[in-house]
Image (cartoon, rainbow, N blue to C red; front, side, top):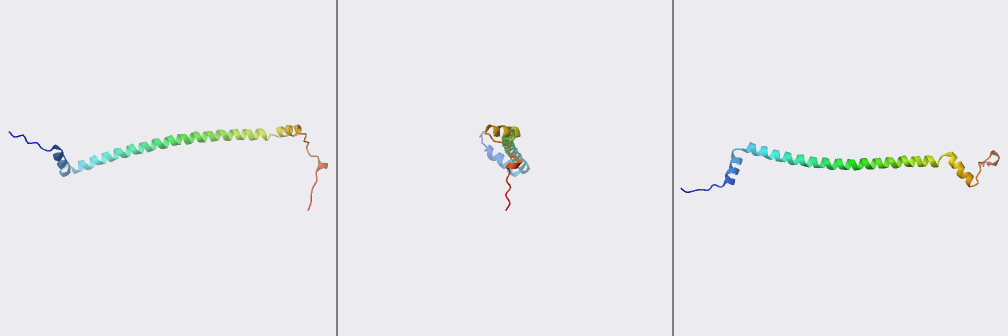
Length: 103
């Protein structure tokens, strides 16, 4: 009895291309769908990480803005300005000291 070997790969490829074209297209569609799902998931994770960084930056800037407003308010308080003026020996202007220039 002679044992003949059949090329299994060739037989499978011939069977797929000649009889099961629909199955082959479906297989390619599943593979393409899987690759697309993986790519979209990766892009979503990158964008989520970037959004987290931007939210942190935004919170930091808002925090700095609040501190700057507080600092501006504390420096512009009238009592503080008057205290510094007295420290330098400044006095408020009186009506008789005002000079109005008219052209």
